[in-house]
Image 1 (cartoon, rainbow, N blue to C red):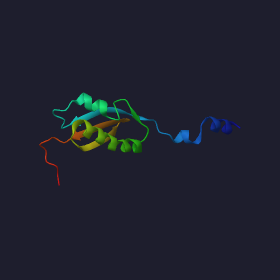
Image 2: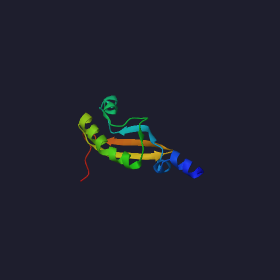
Image 3: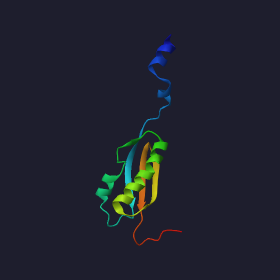
Image 4: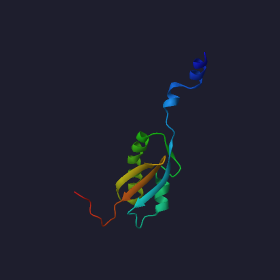
Length: 103
């Protein structure tokens, strides 16, 4: 009876759910001449937002690249995230106008 009471209060999926990981920092590289505040505002993710899973974090990358291109007119050449001590640190590089794109 005691086990029934515990399971009725703790659904099967609840034990398997991981806590959300917050975005701790967002850094940009190669953004000379770009209004960084405008770029940050256009992003689909912000410092303090959370990702409930690694898969969801990866699914956001195309939307990040799209926002960077829309605001800057330049493609993102790298969108990298690192999970450190329960937080995601996001690093995005924007191509400079005079930078060669590798073939």
